[in-house]
Figure 1 (spheres, rainbow, N blue to C red):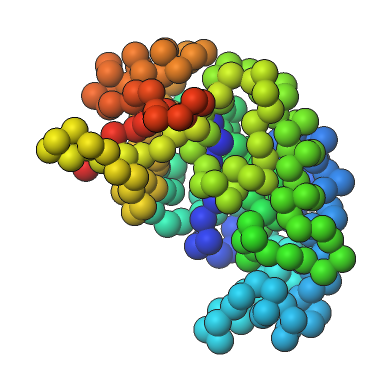
Figure 2 (figure 1 turned 30 degrees about the vertical axis):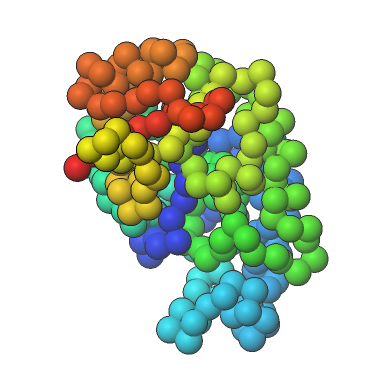
Length: 249
């Protein structure tokens, strides 16, 4: 599963400082180091950092957070992020087997470190997919080709739950079985519409249920079959390569 990150994050942590060797997809270490170095360097110029990161006056403390990236404590990525999707996922309340499954099967696409494992230790940070860091190409150019190459070895069916902005940072290559999930609501007349807030909630609940059930899924058909048994509705989308998830209450 490929998940988006969240702008909101928990502070602190009890893990050792960031070490690229401790992250999933270690082939991405050069890109990770380049982005981290640029973010830390940017933090030395608070005025410029505020503009690049699009910070309000109340958010200027995020510059100090970024300045401390190399020495800051870490926590598992799935626990670091907050917000609608991650609140619905509720990873902290999952049992050990479910969390271990997430650690093996879920990647969170970040702007700072590329895709990281759900249990990978990461620090707090501030960086969005659309940021343009000094001394670097746009983040899409930094990440896209490298991540596409890293994703080529992903096994089974890749269930892409990322927003379009974060999916652009790490395209799933052709030849890898995948489906891009869109959350929709069905009206009384059968028409469907895409959702925003409940999009994130429904994705979080889907990931939670997958972690609890831990099914073996190798195709979209198997995903839809499991969903039916789990009381969910997953069906073919309007476009090739896409799947629709009917919004959860």
